[in-house]
Length: 366
Image 1: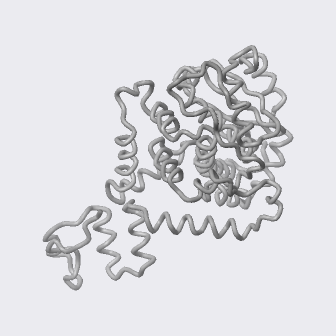
Image 2 (image 1 turned 45 degrees about the horizontal axis):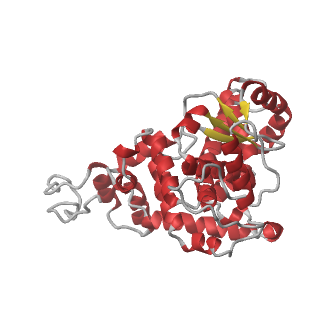
Image 3 (image 1 turned 90 degrees about the vertical axis):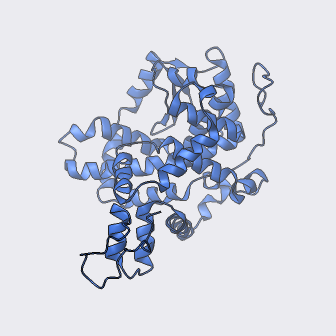
């Protein structure tokens, strides 16, 4: 089943590892799980979830794809069908979800549906990616299906496109926007999980990196470099001052996906981790153990992840958070330097004890 048409010589071995009975817990990003728990606890979410579950036109959605897109199968986009079946085989997803190709020049893919997941690829994406890059993307979407993400993604898409404008939903627009914001936060974290699933399916980190680079810069690989692309992520995280940190948050809030360089850096870090290697070695959580999973363990994993993120982050805002948590003595001076940068000799006329950030010995703002 792992053979693909064409037998291309410039791709890795077709003999990929398979992960029988793998649980989505094996690859889910801790922030994905914690964001989903927080979403479910959000006031009004249960009400709107139950309301929309009965209102969403899922049957209409399926008929729309059936009538106005191309269904992938043995006779249509057969190479994509082989990749889909291969991805389901590797992740041991018993029922292969239907997949469609939709005419849209914007490169995109999604996994939606309430009762059963449906995968949709745009023509812009199919034309942009090579075989191994596409294999990672299809694995990404199958990862969404295995994790049960399709339901929440469908609700988010419906809310952002329709429900905000509908006054008869039994919640005000402010409450709906709070849920949309929480859904987007979870949506972004779920992408990190699905990127990992794509790597488990494709088992080619370079292909995953290339695909993300193409999403950012188009089909110009000869003009791009993976190491330079990853350096952008590092520069993005640590660059600027507190104002830039706030702008990063504001830029991210309306987005459904994390920034592409950040996704690439996160995936590379996970690929080099012990957790990833253990999965490849066959040591991973099984689906038949999911019912025995401790919720408190998930909370601890998520809390440990966030604590580690704050501890290791080079972002100026996270540096300020560390200082506050550590009981920094001169928080006023630290905040001033974080926002405006340190100023050599800038203590004159500042008042106070004269121990502020002057004489070049203050915090550097790095």
